[in-house]
Length: 65
Length: 207
Image 1 (cartoon, one colour):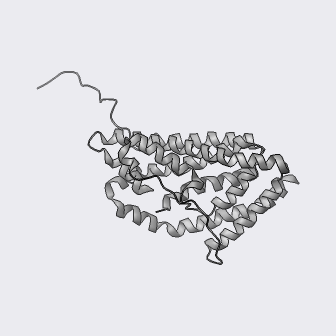
Image 2: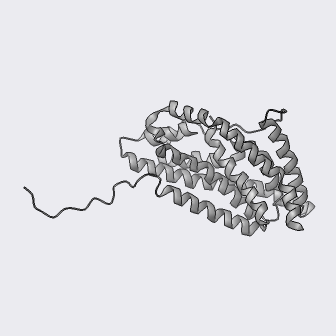
Image 3: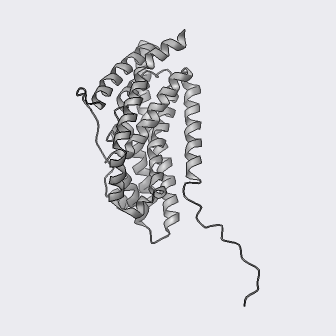
Protein backbone atom coordinates (compact mmCIF):
# COMPACT_ATOMS: atom_id res chain seq x y z
CA UNK A 1 0.00 0.00 0.00
CA UNK A 2 1.37 3.38 -0.91
CA UNK A 3 1.29 5.88 1.98
CA UNK A 4 2.99 8.78 0.26
CA UNK A 5 1.63 12.33 0.27
CA UNK A 6 -1.19 12.97 -2.15
CA UNK A 7 -0.28 14.89 -5.21
CA UNK A 8 -2.58 17.81 -5.94
CA UNK A 9 -4.63 17.71 -9.10
CA UNK A 10 -2.70 19.18 -12.01
CA UNK A 11 -3.70 22.79 -12.57
CA UNK A 12 -3.81 22.17 -16.29
CA UNK A 13 -7.12 20.34 -15.89
CA UNK A 14 -9.75 21.96 -18.03
CA UNK A 15 -12.00 24.37 -16.16
CA UNK A 16 -15.74 23.92 -16.46
CA UNK A 17 -16.84 25.27 -19.80
CA UNK A 18 -18.28 28.73 -19.90
CA UNK A 19 -16.94 29.73 -16.48
CA UNK A 20 -14.28 31.92 -18.03
CA UNK A 21 -15.82 32.70 -21.41
CA UNK A 22 -19.13 34.09 -20.15
CA UNK A 23 -17.78 36.80 -17.80
CA UNK A 24 -15.01 37.68 -20.28
CA UNK A 25 -17.56 38.25 -23.06
CA UNK A 26 -19.87 40.30 -20.81
CA UNK A 27 -16.97 42.40 -19.48
CA UNK A 28 -15.59 43.06 -22.99
CA UNK A 29 -19.05 43.97 -24.28
CA UNK A 30 -19.60 46.38 -21.39
CA UNK A 31 -16.21 48.06 -21.84
CA UNK A 32 -16.77 48.52 -25.59
CA UNK A 33 -20.35 49.71 -25.05
CA UNK A 34 -19.32 52.16 -22.34
CA UNK A 35 -16.55 53.54 -24.54
CA UNK A 36 -19.04 53.86 -27.40
CA UNK A 37 -21.53 55.63 -25.15
CA UNK A 38 -19.01 58.11 -23.77
CA UNK A 39 -17.54 58.88 -27.16
CA UNK A 40 -20.83 59.07 -29.10
CA UNK A 41 -22.35 61.47 -26.52
CA UNK A 42 -25.78 60.03 -27.33
CA UNK A 43 -28.44 60.35 -24.61
CA UNK A 44 -28.64 57.24 -22.42
CA UNK A 45 -31.98 56.05 -23.77
CA UNK A 46 -30.98 56.43 -27.39
CA UNK A 47 -27.69 54.66 -26.84
CA UNK A 48 -29.42 51.76 -25.09
CA UNK A 49 -31.66 51.32 -28.15
CA UNK A 50 -28.70 51.46 -30.53
CA UNK A 51 -26.80 48.98 -28.36
CA UNK A 52 -29.81 46.65 -28.24
CA UNK A 53 -29.95 46.69 -32.04
CA UNK A 54 -26.19 46.15 -32.34
CA UNK A 55 -26.15 43.20 -29.93
CA UNK A 56 -29.25 41.62 -31.48
CA UNK A 57 -27.75 41.94 -34.96
CA UNK A 58 -24.82 39.89 -33.68
CA UNK A 59 -26.86 37.28 -31.84
CA UNK A 60 -29.39 36.77 -34.64
CA UNK A 61 -26.66 35.32 -36.85
CA UNK A 62 -26.73 32.27 -34.62
CA UNK A 63 -29.85 31.25 -36.48
CA UNK A 64 -28.49 31.80 -39.97
CA UNK A 65 -27.76 28.69 -41.99
CA UNK B 1 -22.43 29.28 -38.52
CA UNK B 2 -22.59 26.75 -35.71
CA UNK B 3 -21.79 24.01 -38.22
CA UNK B 4 -18.47 25.66 -38.98
CA UNK B 5 -17.59 26.26 -35.34
CA UNK B 6 -18.47 22.67 -34.45
CA UNK B 7 -16.30 21.49 -37.27
CA UNK B 8 -13.31 23.58 -36.20
CA UNK B 9 -13.67 22.53 -32.56
CA UNK B 10 -13.80 18.85 -33.42
CA UNK B 11 -11.26 18.93 -36.24
CA UNK B 12 -8.17 18.37 -34.10
CA UNK B 13 -9.75 16.30 -31.33
CA UNK B 14 -6.83 13.92 -31.45
CA UNK B 15 -4.43 16.57 -30.13
CA UNK B 16 -6.26 17.62 -26.96
CA UNK B 17 -9.95 18.45 -27.19
CA UNK B 18 -10.20 20.97 -24.32
CA UNK B 19 -7.14 22.89 -25.46
CA UNK B 20 -8.37 22.99 -29.06
CA UNK B 21 -11.78 24.21 -27.90
CA UNK B 22 -10.46 27.04 -25.75
CA UNK B 23 -7.97 28.07 -28.46
CA UNK B 24 -10.65 28.06 -31.15
CA UNK B 25 -13.14 29.96 -28.99
CA UNK B 26 -10.59 32.59 -27.90
CA UNK B 27 -9.48 33.14 -31.50
CA UNK B 28 -13.13 33.34 -32.47
CA UNK B 29 -13.93 36.07 -29.91
CA UNK B 30 -10.82 38.14 -30.74
CA UNK B 31 -11.55 37.75 -34.45
CA UNK B 32 -15.13 38.89 -33.96
CA UNK B 33 -14.05 42.09 -32.21
CA UNK B 34 -11.37 42.78 -34.84
CA UNK B 35 -13.77 42.21 -37.73
CA UNK B 36 -16.45 44.38 -36.12
CA UNK B 37 -13.95 47.18 -35.53
CA UNK B 38 -12.82 47.03 -39.18
CA UNK B 39 -16.45 47.12 -40.29
CA UNK B 40 -16.98 50.14 -38.03
CA UNK B 41 -13.99 51.88 -39.61
CA UNK B 42 -15.38 51.16 -43.09
CA UNK B 43 -18.73 52.73 -42.10
CA UNK B 44 -17.03 55.60 -40.26
CA UNK B 45 -15.31 56.85 -43.44
CA UNK B 46 -18.49 57.73 -45.42
CA UNK B 47 -20.24 58.75 -42.19
CA UNK B 48 -17.48 61.26 -41.45
CA UNK B 49 -17.59 62.54 -45.06
CA UNK B 50 -21.36 62.96 -44.75
CA UNK B 51 -20.92 64.76 -41.43
CA UNK B 52 -18.38 67.12 -43.01
CA UNK B 53 -20.90 68.07 -45.72
CA UNK B 54 -24.22 68.30 -43.86
CA UNK B 55 -23.08 68.70 -40.25
CA UNK B 56 -24.76 67.06 -37.24
CA UNK B 57 -28.30 65.91 -38.11
CA UNK B 58 -29.23 63.42 -35.35
CA UNK B 59 -32.99 63.93 -35.63
CA UNK B 60 -32.97 63.48 -39.41
CA UNK B 61 -30.98 60.24 -39.20
CA UNK B 62 -33.20 58.96 -36.37
CA UNK B 63 -36.27 59.70 -38.52
CA UNK B 64 -34.83 57.94 -41.60
CA UNK B 65 -33.80 55.02 -39.43
CA UNK B 66 -37.35 54.80 -38.03
CA UNK B 67 -38.84 54.76 -41.54
CA UNK B 68 -36.44 51.98 -42.56
CA UNK B 69 -37.27 50.10 -39.34
CA UNK B 70 -41.02 50.38 -40.13
CA UNK B 71 -40.40 49.02 -43.63
CA UNK B 72 -38.49 46.00 -42.32
CA UNK B 73 -40.80 45.42 -39.34
CA UNK B 74 -43.60 45.06 -41.91
CA UNK B 75 -41.52 42.55 -43.79
CA UNK B 76 -40.73 40.64 -40.59
CA UNK B 77 -44.47 40.43 -39.88
CA UNK B 78 -45.18 39.35 -43.49
CA UNK B 79 -47.27 42.48 -44.11
CA UNK B 80 -45.38 43.69 -47.18
CA UNK B 81 -42.18 42.88 -49.09
CA UNK B 82 -38.98 44.87 -48.69
CA UNK B 83 -35.66 44.45 -50.49
CA UNK B 84 -32.92 42.70 -48.58
CA UNK B 85 -29.64 43.74 -50.22
CA UNK B 86 -26.56 41.93 -48.95
CA UNK B 87 -23.14 40.63 -49.89
CA UNK B 88 -23.75 36.97 -49.16
CA UNK B 89 -20.06 36.13 -49.23
CA UNK B 90 -18.55 33.50 -46.96
CA UNK B 91 -15.04 32.53 -45.97
CA UNK B 92 -13.89 29.81 -48.39
CA UNK B 93 -14.20 26.42 -46.71
CA UNK B 94 -10.76 25.40 -47.97
CA UNK B 95 -9.20 27.96 -45.59
CA UNK B 96 -10.24 25.77 -42.70
CA UNK B 97 -7.96 23.06 -44.00
CA UNK B 98 -5.06 25.32 -45.01
CA UNK B 99 -4.64 27.17 -41.70
CA UNK B 100 -4.42 25.87 -38.16
CA UNK B 101 -7.67 25.70 -36.19
CA UNK B 102 -6.81 28.91 -34.28
CA UNK B 103 -5.89 30.95 -37.37
CA UNK B 104 -8.89 29.62 -39.29
CA UNK B 105 -11.13 30.55 -36.34
CA UNK B 106 -9.73 34.07 -36.19
CA UNK B 107 -10.17 34.62 -39.93
CA UNK B 108 -13.66 33.14 -39.93
CA UNK B 109 -14.80 35.22 -36.95
CA UNK B 110 -13.18 38.37 -38.34
CA UNK B 111 -15.12 37.79 -41.56
CA UNK B 112 -18.30 37.27 -39.51
CA UNK B 113 -17.59 40.51 -37.67
CA UNK B 114 -17.63 42.31 -41.03
CA UNK B 115 -21.39 42.20 -40.68
CA UNK B 116 -22.37 43.98 -43.89
CA UNK B 117 -20.05 41.84 -46.04
CA UNK B 118 -21.67 38.61 -44.89
CA UNK B 119 -25.04 36.95 -45.15
CA UNK B 120 -27.34 39.10 -43.02
CA UNK B 121 -29.45 37.10 -40.60
CA UNK B 122 -31.31 40.07 -39.14
CA UNK B 123 -33.34 42.87 -40.72
CA UNK B 124 -32.11 45.17 -37.94
CA UNK B 125 -28.91 45.58 -39.98
CA UNK B 126 -30.55 48.13 -42.30
CA UNK B 127 -31.90 50.73 -39.83
CA UNK B 128 -28.75 50.28 -37.75
CA UNK B 129 -26.64 51.19 -40.80
CA UNK B 130 -28.57 54.48 -41.08
CA UNK B 131 -27.96 55.24 -37.41
CA UNK B 132 -24.25 54.50 -37.80
CA UNK B 133 -24.05 56.83 -40.80
CA UNK B 134 -25.54 59.54 -38.60
CA UNK B 135 -22.73 59.22 -36.06
CA UNK B 136 -20.11 60.62 -38.45
CA UNK B 137 -19.07 63.27 -35.93
CA UNK B 138 -17.82 60.54 -33.58
CA UNK B 139 -16.22 57.89 -35.82
CA UNK B 140 -14.64 56.08 -32.88
CA UNK B 141 -18.12 55.45 -31.46
CA UNK B 142 -19.10 53.73 -34.74
CA UNK B 143 -16.03 51.50 -34.48
CA UNK B 144 -16.79 50.62 -30.86
CA UNK B 145 -20.48 49.88 -31.49
CA UNK B 146 -19.68 47.68 -34.48
CA UNK B 147 -17.00 45.92 -32.39
CA UNK B 148 -19.78 45.08 -29.90
CA UNK B 149 -21.79 43.61 -32.78
CA UNK B 150 -18.79 41.58 -33.93
CA UNK B 151 -18.19 40.34 -30.40
CA UNK B 152 -21.86 39.42 -29.95
CA UNK B 153 -21.81 37.55 -33.24
CA UNK B 154 -18.63 35.66 -32.37
CA UNK B 155 -19.84 34.94 -28.82
CA UNK B 156 -22.55 32.69 -30.15
CA UNK B 157 -19.72 30.20 -30.82
CA UNK B 158 -19.49 29.60 -27.07
CA UNK B 159 -22.82 27.80 -27.32
CA UNK B 160 -21.12 24.96 -29.20
CA UNK B 161 -19.28 23.55 -26.17
CA UNK B 162 -21.92 24.71 -23.68
CA UNK B 163 -24.72 22.83 -25.45
CA UNK B 164 -22.27 20.11 -26.50
CA UNK B 165 -23.25 20.63 -30.12
CA UNK B 166 -19.80 19.47 -31.19
CA UNK B 167 -20.67 16.03 -29.87
CA UNK B 168 -24.28 15.89 -31.02
CA UNK B 169 -23.85 16.47 -34.75
CA UNK B 170 -25.47 18.72 -37.31
CA UNK B 171 -29.02 17.50 -36.59
CA UNK B 172 -28.81 19.06 -33.11
CA UNK B 173 -27.81 22.40 -34.64
CA UNK B 174 -30.73 22.28 -37.07
CA UNK B 175 -33.13 21.30 -34.28
CA UNK B 176 -31.92 24.23 -32.16
CA UNK B 177 -32.41 26.66 -35.05
CA UNK B 178 -35.91 25.38 -35.77
CA UNK B 179 -36.93 25.31 -32.11
CA UNK B 180 -36.22 28.99 -31.59
CA UNK B 181 -37.16 30.37 -35.03
CA UNK B 182 -40.51 31.76 -33.77
CA UNK B 183 -38.87 33.45 -30.77
CA UNK B 184 -36.20 34.95 -33.03
CA UNK B 185 -38.90 36.43 -35.27
CA UNK B 186 -40.66 37.99 -32.28
CA UNK B 187 -37.47 39.52 -30.89
CA UNK B 188 -36.65 40.81 -34.36
CA UNK B 189 -39.98 42.69 -34.50
CA UNK B 190 -39.49 44.04 -30.95
CA UNK B 191 -35.99 45.39 -31.74
CA UNK B 192 -37.25 46.95 -34.99
CA UNK B 193 -40.11 48.47 -32.96
CA UNK B 194 -37.57 50.00 -30.57
CA UNK B 195 -35.80 51.58 -33.53
CA UNK B 196 -39.12 53.00 -34.76
CA UNK B 197 -39.35 54.82 -31.41
CA UNK B 198 -35.90 56.35 -31.85
CA UNK B 199 -37.04 59.80 -33.11
CA UNK B 200 -39.59 60.06 -30.29
CA UNK B 201 -36.91 59.19 -27.74
CA UNK B 202 -34.69 61.79 -29.38
CA UNK B 203 -37.44 64.39 -28.96
CA UNK B 204 -38.09 63.34 -25.36
CA UNK B 205 -34.45 63.73 -24.43
CA UNK B 206 -34.47 67.25 -25.87
CA UNK B 207 -37.43 68.44 -23.79
